[in-house]
Amino acid sequence: MRTLLWRALALLSVALGLIGIVLPGLPTVPFLLLAAWAGGKGWPALEAWLLNHPRHGPAIRRWRERGAVPRRAKWAATGMMGLSATALAVSPAPLAVKLAVPAFMAAVALWLWTRPEA
Image (cartoon, rainbow, N blue to C red; front, side, top):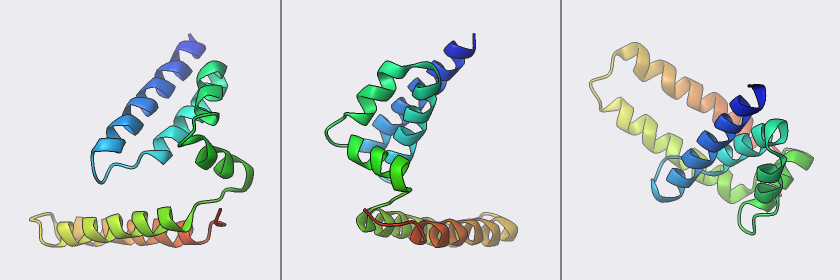
């Protein structure tokens, strides 16, 4: 049963990563990182496939080895968070949400920029 749960998480993560390829604003690599991690727990063949993937494998390996995030990815994530915060600011969301979500995104951006680069 445990193996099935790890595989389900891995498949869900891969699916979200694939959707992220075509849907702007939905990240791909974080979901693939999660898929590789879950695959390592219950689906070694999927983990190996992700680690050896020609496009996304190097990013997953860099993250695992050094916690590294390429500068281009940092800029893209920061830009998307900025756009999201701007859209939220002009939305009819409650004030608490308009303050809390951008604060959380700022903390994530700060953490992201402290990661080593590839």
